[in-house]
Image (cartoon, rainbow over all chains, first blue to last red; front, side):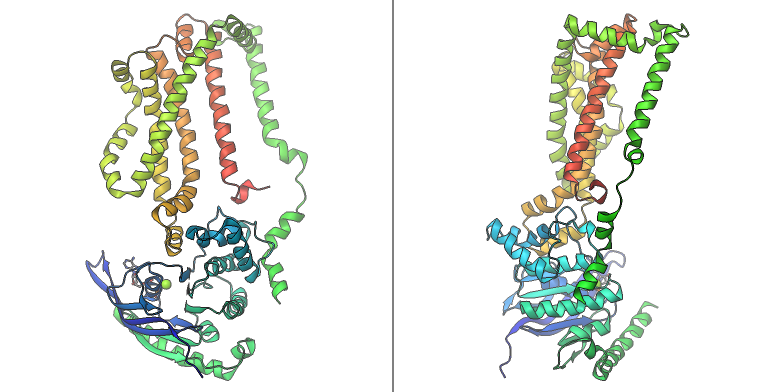
Amino acid sequence: MDQPPVKLEAIDVHLDYYNERMKRRLVVLDKINMTVSKGEVVCIVGPSGCGKSSFLNAVGGLLPITDGQLRLNGRQIRGPGPDRAIVFQHDSLFPWRSVLHNVMYGLSLQGKHSKHEIQERSRYFVNLVGLDGFEDHYPSELSGGMRQRVNIARALAVDPEVLLLDEPFAALDSQTREFMQLELLKILARAQKTAVFITHQIDEAVFIANKVAVFSARPAKIKEVVAIDYSGERTLDFKHSTEFLHLQQKIWRLIDVVTIGTEAEMI
Amino acid sequence: METILDEAESPSIVERRRSPRPGFWSRNETWILGTISVSAFLLFWQYSVSAGLVNPLFTSSPIRIVRTAIDMFSQGEIYNDIKVSGIEFLWGYALSILVGVPMGILMGWYRRINAIFEPFVSALYASPRIALVPLMVIWFGIGLGSKIAIIFLGAVFPILINMVTGVRTVDRDFIKVARAFGASDRQLFATVVFPSTVPMLLAGLRLGLGHALIGIVVGEMYAATAGIGYMISVAGSTFRTSQVMVGVIMIAGLGVGLTEALRAIERRFERWRPDNRR
Ligand SMILES: Nc1ncnc2c1ncn2[C@@H]1O[C@H](COP(=O)(O)OP(=O)(O)O)[C@@H](O)[C@H]1O
Ligand SMILES: [Mg+2]
């Protein structure tokens, strides 16, 4: 079996912020090493405030890292680019743009395609996330789940090689969240995307990931990368299997230790 | 499964289509009540004068005002006043938009530019600008120039300050999204900052409009040779109350008309807000 090519690579990534209140630099990422292969879905879990979002923003090119290297297709990441797209937790759809025009946003910035082409491609992705018929609705007319789907369509429309998702389903109710997880898996499979997905829900991570990277408390180091080698189709059956429970418990334990550590640090 | 959830997820849309049309009264209540109260007021006013309860020299009356207006428009002197005031207003207001909007954007976006100009803006905005009228007349004479300057000074600050606030309060998340999609500074401005500030901009224009109208009257009352404010002031000093009223009504009418026009633009730009849709 051929090994799929490496898409994304983090080598000894170090990041610190200047903290105004403490008047000193705060190390957030400490020697993060990670590889993501083409077509892989990697989930990042870890206690809140450990630096998951910072890592994702750095991969997205929104935040320069202080040391180490972040590479996409072997080339160093220097800023945002059309090869990556970010889906934030807060859906951040532009309220003054209709669903279709929100999805058209990324492509229209690039100015590489005709208006007609952009519209057609965006329509395709609106359909892909199951929102055909809602093209002309404004975000304020949609439910949270629908808005988050538009958010994902907006990211997919620029045809990124890597999709970066920062707790995209955190604000949804549990029923909608489960539904969206299934949808996301379908979408990623259909569009053949590589994805880095942050979540604080361990079951969510186990369900959608090929690999789960467990971050330690700040400064974040990678505690362990847990492979989710489930060969079958990811359906609710998987969620109810003993294998699923074992993986969930394994990750729980890894994080549990970390959480106690954070509390001790705070005291 | 997919379809079931889709339907469950969009109850608001289903509801909106099915909700019954509100009745005649609830649709028209606002303007009917307004018309009744204004008519009652006018009748009471007219009655008080006709019954000799008050002296029309002080209060005039609706009928006298209408007659005076007809006289004034048939004699034709008023047209020149309208033209003079109109030109002053257009120049002053246009100039305050042309200066207030770009300056507001720059001050809102760039911390340094704000630091440089903020003291002047605050000082001028806080001080009663009527106090500057004599100075404007000394600098620009009693003609068009001083009126434009006075109107400008009145209208520019509300516009500018609203614009600064608008730019400052642009949602950080929107900026982050635009940046993540690789927006250049220019694109960021055109696709995020400007659309976000439209509500504040239009509110600023409305505030500025009120100040501009005050500017016309104040400027012309202090020193002028023509204009509606001048006409009001001359009529007032010779106890021609009805003429004063005609002038006041004209200014008020202009204010209401332009405010409504701005509201219409606002609704046009804000169709996406839930309460602006039908
Ligand atoms: N722009 C910033 N400036 C300074 N400190 C920040 C900034 N963004 C995040 N931090 C700090 O970095 C740490 C990690 O934040 P974040 O990456 O958002 O964590 P997570 O997503 O894992 O919850 C937190 O302690 C946070 O306070
Ligand atoms: Mg986060």
